[in-house]
Image (cartoon, rainbow, N blue to C red; front, side, top):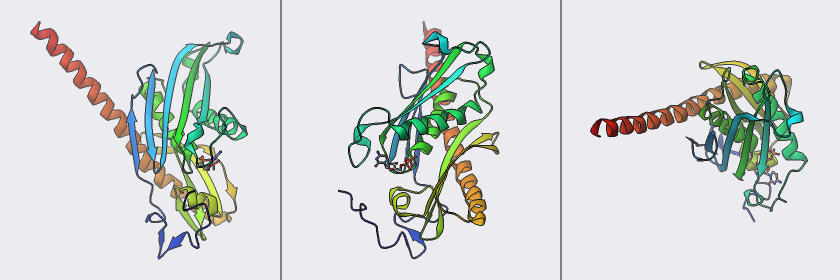
Amino acid sequence: MSEFNEKPERLIVDGLRLDGRKFDELRPIKIEASVLKRADGSCYLEMGKNKVIAAVFGPREVHPRHLQDPSKAVVRYRYNMAPFSVEERKRPGPDRRSVEISKVSKEAFEAVIMKELFPRSAIDIFVEVLQADAGSRTACLNAASVALVDAGVPMKGMITSVAVGKADGHLVLDPMKEEDNFGEADMPFAFLIRNGKIESIALLQMDGRMTKEEVRQAIELAKKGALQIYQMQREAILRRYIEVGEEMDEITEGDEDA
Ligand code: CDP
């Protein structure tokens, strides 16, 4: 049993959160692009204790064929939680929660993927949660976005996602499990970011209670966090391009030697 299964007396102590973060601080993030050999694009991502992997396939033929759209690609998104990813073993397979997360996440990507370029085809996005600690949908959206770029799928921008919670009356960026369980609100966002600028909100959900003013502040806090995550997504992609460039150089040098 986790030490945090019971409500801690306070979620904020001396102006800091239980994991030592400031209100506007993200959890540590790690992103690695191109981790799976068989996917067209992939990404491994950690956001705090969340560990997720995204795999993208396509554009490819649609099966079953009656799902084809003659004018554009269909986007499919499957969010899946491993049974061992949570404290209490999760029954394998889809449940209401994962169906809902898959639906809203798919809709966020439909807003950015240039589907019209690929009529009759499918772009399949699979995300697997290996370890969850609140905000797993946001971690998956961030990983999926990098995996789509890795697959070379044309997009109008990046999808970058982060939640804002409310703990002991304070708005907190990127809530972890204890804040999600025992806080007063949770508001996940996904933004469409193009050239470093937030263009629109592609996903917005909310449970709990916030005042109108808090909602306004939550949007600002989420934007600030998302821009930081966006930079890390970019860096992960650039790192991968540099690696590919070096691999290409080695191949070319090899050719010259021959
Ligand atoms: O993960 P996310 O915050 O996007 O979704 P949620 O439905 O708000 O779930 C919050 C957290 O509850 C998850 O990240 C898991 O840590 C936990 N959870 C769980 O322990 N068992 C489940 N069957 C589902 C979620």
